[in-house]
Length: 303
Image 1: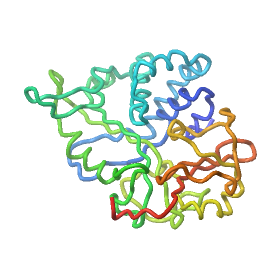
Image 2 (image 1 turned 135 degrees about the vertical axis):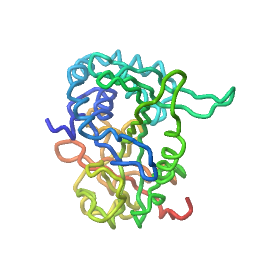
Image 3 (image 1 turned 90 degrees about the horizontal axis):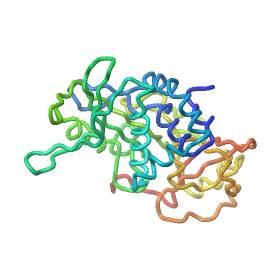
């Protein structure tokens, strides 16, 4: 089994996404403009955690009820929170790793004023250290020049990878302790996918031009293009497509939803003025490529 696409082996959507949370590549290799010691939990770390968790994932795939019940306890279904809860489910499963959760969403106060919140405070039982983990899942569309972090924009809002990294560097990792716990180590988890313009990447191949130095070399990639470019693209015409909602933004998708597919030229018009995600399936009905499709040009200078 290829570790890179390990999540493809699971049928249950939640289990497949949990496998993706563990096995998918990191987006960043380091955090710019942060001068304190910081560990980016990289692909070697996550492959070790994924391999140790395979027996539990296989068990959950046969009976996903425990995971479904856990997720049902958390009412906010926004993608960032869903990612956070999947990571929390794994982190609380002490039989498969050496971390002990001290506090999830550890809120810090100055008197009665909230001054911050740590995503996870954990104890590493291999080292004895108290670790502060910050986690994020991000999907950004790149607008040349791709060496400018402020020109990697979120699909639905004014978020950019540059603003996110600044917030992490100057706010989220600025705390030294939580209650009686002194923080010994700071750890960053950023996963997701970057969508490159056609000027830098074809639908089926990896990007070929310079981009941000801080990106991990094996980060997940896809493309974005305009609607007219999409329906006329020769590679798009080789596949069957469907428009997908955010519950399919993480792991590669199977055909098991039994939702209708269409040729690129046969797809209905875009349902909104925002970029929308489409997945293309090959003749074997496996996901082959994904891309954001924009109804019209977006000017990154406006964000």
